[in-house]
Image 1 (cartoon, rainbow, N blue to C red):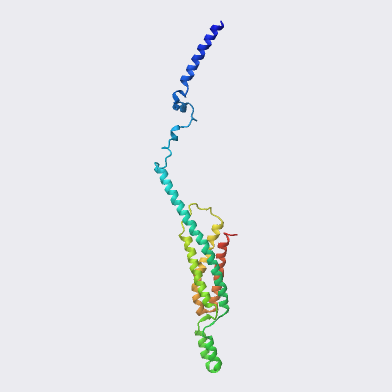
Image 2: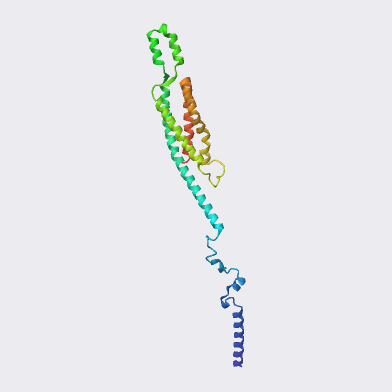
Length: 240
């Protein structure tokens, strides 16, 4: 009886083993059947070198070209803005020097022909009074000292300002726009509406000083310091 049970057990074991081997996904190392049974099995065809070859994919080539152009554009923008910041500091220093020398020139502002008119008046006051008055009215205004230095500094400041503004204007635009609202860039750009008109107006006001004298010089003083203050705020927002 025990012998018969052993034979039956062996027959059942062989039958089950044959059935399992026949249905196994690993028969003949065929992984296609296993992929259908288990969806988590990776697709081994995707590991082919040809599948991941970027040289044969036109889409990847276009993306690489776009990325390269974007990198060059960002590097150019960064370079121009670095020069913009550096020249901006030079412009600030020269504008300050121009205003300080301008204060000295304003305190020494006099009629250009005044020494000659005074000589005529002193030599014969009664006879030369009318001549003295006519000379003083027709005489242009000029500063005895610091006038030429002020003009040279003003020209240098205007040139530096133009170069600084040009670097920012011609730099490539940024790809990502910042959110609207009060920020460092917003304040920096807002100050342009003050120091730019001031810088453009100063040369025209300066030309009026020779005829209008202290009135035009005081106007130039106010505009010069207002523009300098706006430029100072525009620079300070990046450092404080």
